[in-house]
Length: 313
Image 1 (tube, rainbow, N blue to C red):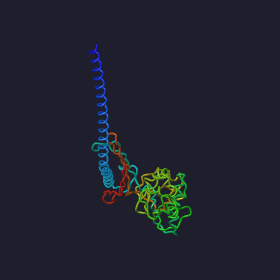
Image 2: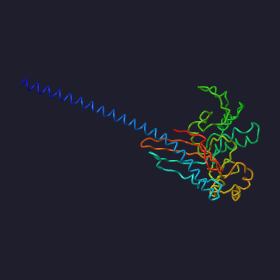
Image 3: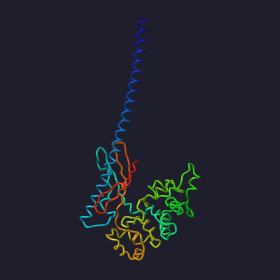
Image 4: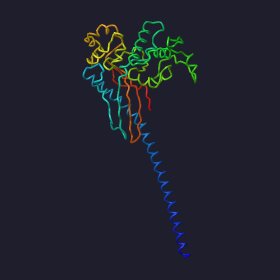
């Protein structure tokens, strides 16, 4: 019997050791798998980050190809029927896939136009009223425009519903009004009254370009942007303009009878071609996706594009 007891104890010890070995192996296997997944994610993230640069070059190539196509056809206008306006979906690039959408930034109102007018000019009121009409059409408080004016103008003279440095220095943490043009739409979040939701709602209709006084491309502009250009432009008139697109020249818009008189008044405020485009890029490598927004300026004579800004998210 003692021998049977010894054999039983030995069996129990063997089973205990086996259980410990299995637990150790499983833990090691789990840790190895986690490290492998982390390493794979790091690898794919690095690849996606690198491929963003290739995606930017792809967007530039599309704009170049569109320019050459238009030049061959003798066309000097830009519209939503152009090559650049066609979305790119799951295009194989390196070890990943690219999805992209190019937009015409000239089809939007440029917020930096508010920084380029003198404080007592009729032009200033015209531009402020234009943005207030857009905000009203978007069902946003038009008083927000006053705050933007105070942020981008060079003085500390407060607009009726605006805010200058005195207001911002009372915030926590305190800061000053920029008194300079916006560098991007993200700057709006620093301005009195603006929230992330408001900025997102505005992003389809406004842009931030360094050259003020930019003309709106009526071949690509949204109906609300067209209506905001002048108080006499109704929703029906904006729809009529959109239905008649594309326009090869500015004069072609005169065939829209209801717009002809207005067009003569604001001729310098609109155009039918563009030089600045944005591209929303998404690169997917296995389970990792990197997104970016690049703004490109295309040379109207050569078709080559230069990068004005690039933000990777």
